[in-house]
Image 1 (cartoon, rainbow, N blue to C red):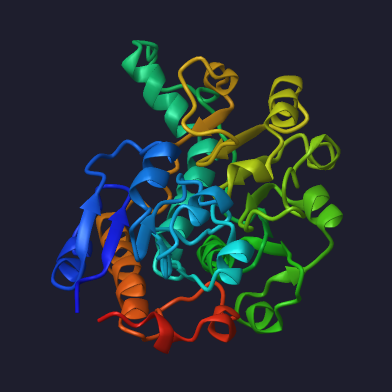
Image 2: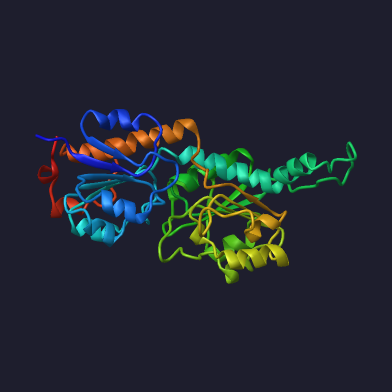
Length: 336
C-alpha cells in the first residue's frame, strides 16, 4: 500500500514532521510566510491529508480541488478559516488543537491586562526614547490598580475560566457573560453570571474570550463600547473580527474608554502605519497569545496526530465535525 500524500502549509516546530514522516509522503511549504491560496489549490490536488494554519482559507474552492482529501488538520483551536459544513458533506474529517493552549492564552490575557493598566509598554518606550528625566515623582507614570477591581469575561469557556482563575488570585470581582450559565465555575471561582450590558457597565476590565461566529462578529461595536466605563479597559485575545476596529479607534481617541490591549486584529498583520500604532492608550501584540515553546510544540504534536489517526482509521484526538462519521466512516478513509 502506498503512503498517503499530505500537504503541510507552514514550517512547524517539532515533533510534527517526526510523527508524520514515517507514515506519509510529505510536501512542505517550508517557510514562516503563508502560501498563496493558488499554491494550496495547485498542490493539494493529489493529497489525502492537509495540515493547515488559521491563516489559510480552506473554502469550497480548495476542497473541490482535492478529490482524494480525507482529513484537514488545523494547527489552531479556531476553525472559522475552514468551510466545515462543506468539508463534512464531502466526508472530510477536521481536527483542531483545543485545550493545549488554554494556559498560555490566559497568561497572555493577564499580561496584556497588567501591561495596559500599569502602562508598562509606554514606560519602556519612554525610557528607550530618553524621556526619563526625574528619578521619582508622586504623579509620574500613574496607572490603574488591578488588585480588587472588577473583571468582566465575555465567553467563559476553557480560556475564559483559566483567566478567571488568575483573576481570583488578584482578589478581583469576576463577572461573566456566556450563552450558557456555568454553575460549576461560579462555585469554584465566585464568578457572577450577568447580562452583556451589565457586564460592560460594571467592569473595570473587559476580556473577550469567544469564538468567531456570525453572532460574535463585531460583538464590540460602537453601541457596546459606549456602555463601558470611561475608566475601563478592553482586552482581546479571541479573534480580531469580534471587535469593530473603527468603533474602537473612536472609543480610544474620544475617551469612551481608557485603553485597550489587543493580540488579534480584523486583518493581520497590521503595519506600522495602522491608526492603533499612533495611540499611547493601547498595547499591541502580534497574535502571540499561544506563543510559548511548550504550547506551540504540543499543538504541532496534536495536529500531526489528528491527521495521522484519521489516515489510520482511528478517531482524531480532537474532532471538529463528528457528523462526518455518518457520511464516511473511518473504515473508509483508512490508508495506513
